[in-house]
Image (cartoon, rainbow, N blue to C red; front, side, top):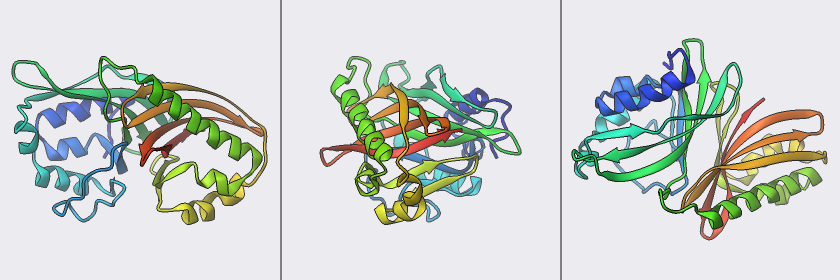
Length: 263
């Protein structure tokens, strides 16, 4: 799937097909495997489709369409929902095969009043067929009237701790800068879930154990009560790249919950 000509075309197709209550069309806005990461812990549900993992990964379009068809739109309509309006997206960073878009949505009633709004970081990948949404990092708890400065500061401090431990090559403190399961979005089609610190150590311990100088700048993309998305430009040793993060508060601790890199 993901057969759209541009990242923004895939973004708008997401809302068009959601509003049309078209499971297959909605699934067609994505690249696969597709993942939705929420700053708020999702409730445990026994009625979800089995292909969806605990971290919210959908391996194929059929898996996503099945979820949409089984869950239905009645749960939204019960709140008075008639349509969802996407916000105009902003390109945070992009390459020829991957893009980070700052976007989000508002659910509306028939009288156009707002039900709920959110801000989301969309990770789009260009696969063989075209562009699709590979991942969504949901801030949760965003509002028009609150800048959430304290939450933004906490998220930037969490990123600072991550960078300090990485620069020093201190693997164990570095591993403690993440919430698990941790979602990592790499090259197009590369969606990895690190279930715990042991998995993260096995995959990246040698890389993180190299003490290399780091220079970076970071900006807040969006902030809510439960999560903050950050944009970072970083040089580590001889490598320069862009990263976007979802930083979430869990049990009073702000840590990294999801990362997407553009190299």
